[in-house]
Amino acid sequence: MIKHVLTDFFGVLSSEVAPVWLPRHMSNEEAVAYKRDVINRVDLGEFSYRELLGYLSSLTGVPASQIHEEWYDISKPHVDYISLLRGLKECDVYLLSNASSEFVRCLIDKHGLMDLFADVFISAEIRLAKPDASYFRYCLDKIGAKAEECVFIDDNPVNVEAAKKVGIIAILFENAAQIRREFEILGIS
Image (tube, rainbow, N blue to C red; front, top):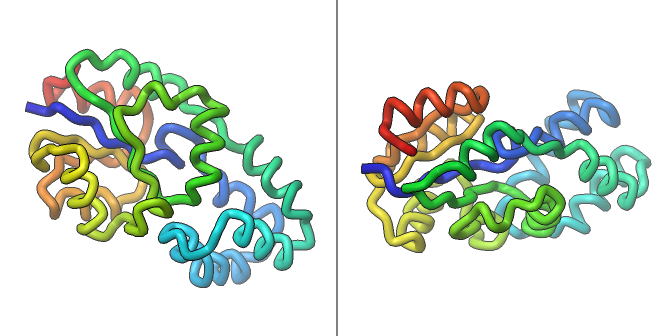
């Protein structure tokens, strides 16, 4: 029986931000370098949000404060999916996100989502990131759950496969209607 819904943030609860912003301000080669040189360090809490904004500012010439405002504005909640999660009666919802703690927490506040979560696991805070199996095991341990009691929703196929390898039921997110159908099949209400 599924007792816990584990959900990603960017691309699932909210629109993607960096993949929308980066092509507006840099070449594909610069974006690849950014992802290679910075993103893993941000996800693991080795590179602060301020450092991230400074790095992007140095690459693009866009002031760091403007980058933050643009990123903040790009993030749009997926209201149908959030409504689906809010309607769950028998499952707790947990956030599992690879990201800068400061930025994700800012967006959680912006979208009024904190009350949705039984707990929040942000990679930069716990210094582990998806798709590392230890990230999923850490979250399961903190939740006090068995893998088979959880369903994980993410828009990244690599993360979905990694969760499955740990024994978690995992679904690749497309849209709220698809997740609703998957929940019905799994008996989640």
